[in-house]
Length: 228
Length: 228
Image (tube, rainbow over all chains, first blue to last red; front, side, top):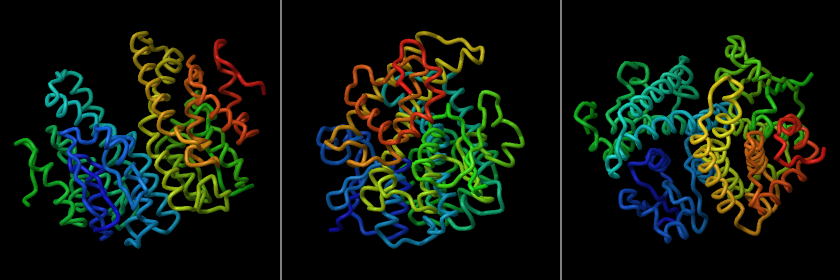
């Protein structure tokens, strides 16, 4: 049994990002699946013994508890030998990866997650969805995905911080997959983004598909599914 | 003339955080004030030559451009010798600082900034403020500040990641100052928070007060001002 415990739900975007990272880097770990749909993260026991934020993903390394996906990437990159490209040692390249990791919180991450929660989660929770509000949220998300393309995919580089994949790309692709469940495919009308996401997928497979298997199951009819 | 150029507006929370950090660490830099109220960040020249996100703060180190306050802290901590407590070398303590830096984006940072923008900026821009919406936003912000206190100030430590101040505390305090301009003092009814913010101020002065001088000028009558 490994000492690093990884708590996750594959319907959570950063959980998938960390799942892919842990498998790509071969960091020994023990998978601890947490079913958000069963509110397993909302128990007192979870709050007290696993993660005081009551979220996924998180880790416990021996007795050291850590939450926040980006903080976990950085911690694991210090504690283990990992392929340099994933979180580059070069100070300026690392700064560019960091710049994306900080930027995404109030951009891609919020917009895609908000739309997903509003359109897909609300009906499951018995809450009404206001079609006008859903449309507004879709527009804002769509503008933000355009901005993502314009800012982060506008060079001749294949990936966000250069020609090799980093944790920034893994996290970006995992976020951009999420609105698909709610019926919005961000790659439609965005050939550059489509190519980029496919490249992230190929570069990180088989772990990318493993991480997205459950999400793909939930995709509505009108959204293209990769053949697994 | 130093090679590091620092672009900022002291009415921006992360700008103040970085201002304090740069002065505490004595990293040589050249101040480049950007007046957000004059939309100096929205020009094509700024977008092209300074910061493609059209925001503050950002830096240009020789010809290396970097945005996102947290990414900048990390970059500067690698490039310069800084007091260890500000961004600790110890992997686990650093992870705790990182955990806060990632957590704050969609917590303290969003709630305090959203309230400030809605209540204080809108009237300046000739937009109406709906009192009910303002009240709802205030409640959400207030709940989040309670959560901040509960989660981050609940140990016997003086600061977020231990008994010494780190960039996490600097950023937290700068965010928590912001709603004061909009007439909301987060320290009222929260003695622990009040003591914490005063400690951050004392530990980082005279730079804390320098950074907040303009903000203090804008404080409404009902909000307590420190004597400068």
